[in-house]
Length: 336
Ligand SMILES: Cc1cc2nc3c(=O)[nH]c(=O)nc-3n(C[C@H](O)[C@H](O)[C@H](O)COP(=O)(O)OP(=O)(O)OC[C@H]3O[C@@H](n4cnc5c(N)ncnc54)[C@H](O)[C@@H]3O)c2cc1C
Ligand code: SF4
Image 1 (cartoon, protein in one colour):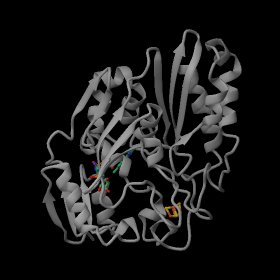
Image 2 (cartoon, rainbow, N blue to C red):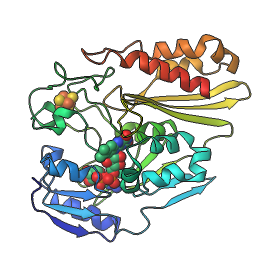
Image 3 (tube, rainbow, N blue to C red):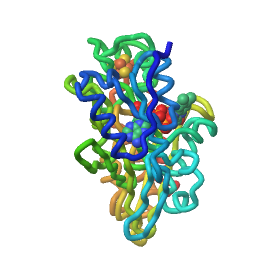
Image 4 (cartoon, rainbow, N blue to C red):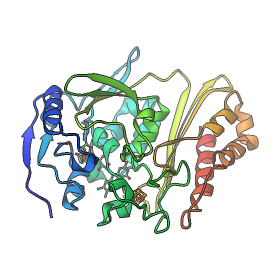
């Protein structure tokens, strides 16, 4: 049952950071124990509060901070997203559909229309693990316990690559697309501001930091920026789910190719659902860079896709993810 809490409206990002700093000073050892937390759309936070996974004493509402829901674009500086931009806005924005297609598609394939109306891009990147042991009444390793129950248990949805002590997968769909577009997070704390690439933001949890990202207790995301893609850049987001809608990714792929005439000048292939962080398929990227369209269609896409999965270590119930990942990469490359 949800415990009582205070609710404070912040009128600026600086005020929100100050409230986080004052309330979380004691630096709790587990991120779950932070006494003060931000609330945006509340679609994830309220769920984990109801399930007693987190029990903050104070919620700081950032929906009262002006302008955090803005989408702005300028060719020189690129795309600027406020952290309160909803997944619905990402999905429908004409410019994002045109220039950052994979991001619009990833938003469209997330959750349900009702949830996308409430869900913000900032909250999406910060959502907690969807591992059912984490969400259930188990004191598993990520929550500060001694054991990862998924490793020998129900691991159908868990990682096949980069497995550490926790084998959960990153649940966000937009994260893969943001990384494919080289996005940067702008982060504010009570006394400092810092920028971090989305690709570096997500981390494999360690014994010293049992968390899925690098955000500190007193920080918030104030913006996400994406450079303007060079001409002749195309992208796609593909996602396999258990059912047609409302499902988290079994496996997903954000692929972006910049063409130089008939040659691939740059390739970004980022996978979801296969590792604790979004997974860059570096081997496949290297395999196709510099090659031509006809190479892709004469077996190269298939070879690159299979090489991308060669380091996979499936668990008892998720061996299906490696061939699924290869199939999605191949399909994405041929689509581009
Ligand atoms: C049934 C269901 C299905 C779903 N399916 C998908 C799916 O297929 N794909 C997918 O990607 N997601 C999916 N989601 C997750 C959903 O997209 C997230 O719950 C949502 O994006 C979170 O955004 P929010 O604004 O509601 O965040 P909140 O719930 O308000 O916050 C989530 C976390 O982010 C923190 N936070 C929020 N904003 C900031 C900020 N600016 N800076 C720092 N911290 C912040 C909060 O403190 C909290 O810890 C699903 C959710 C549900 C309930
Ligand atoms: S995969 Fe991570 S979240 Fe799930 S049981 Fe193991 S330690 Fe906990």
